[in-house]
Amino acid sequence: MKANFEELDDITRKFMLNEYEAEQHSGNPYISPRLSEAGKQIFPELMKKAILSGDAESLEMSLNYPKCWNEKEEYTRNGITKERKINVDQAAERLAFSEFNTLYVRGLTKRLLSEGIEKCQIYRAKDAKWEHGECSRHEGQIVDTRIIYEGHRAKYWPVINESAFSIPAQAGCHHSIRRVK
Image 1 (cartoon, one colour):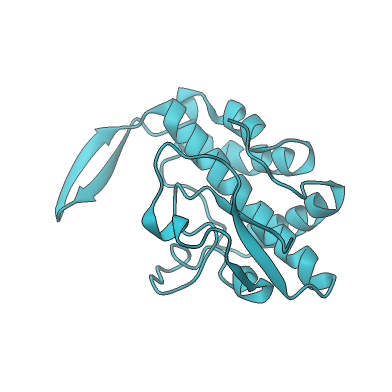
Image 2: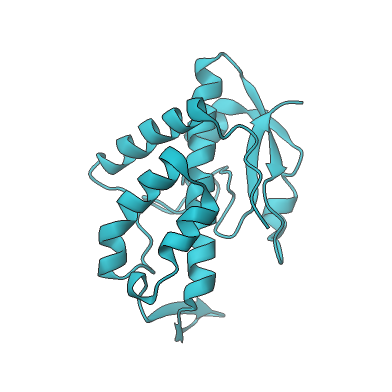
């Protein structure tokens, strides 16, 4: 299913690009640890292209190649660390939607703030196969736009802050923001 980014227009794309470039030039840009060295090299340009003229689905297609991904990853469940093979299709879909949505939220909140809009609403931008409880409890909530802007990646990067409020709320979250209707 295609994601529904309600205000993905040239104006929002400009704000997205400005925010993305600021993050890239910050000296510590976010990059998925699941990407291979080749994937890490090409991801910034693929992301920029998606921001300028694409969407989450076009980014997913660009990332859906084994060369972009590490073969395996470590994960921890119930205190036990194990290793598993990375499913390229799933990894490309998850990273593409998550990153595009993260930059969409960042760009749109910056746009709304520049227009003096102090509140925004959380909505489901794409149906999920399964959803995290934290994500679903925020659906429909009206929140301060500045809180969403300041919560950019706050739960996982550059340091983990479990108590932060972010949209998307976590990896795999399909919620985004919109103007209050």
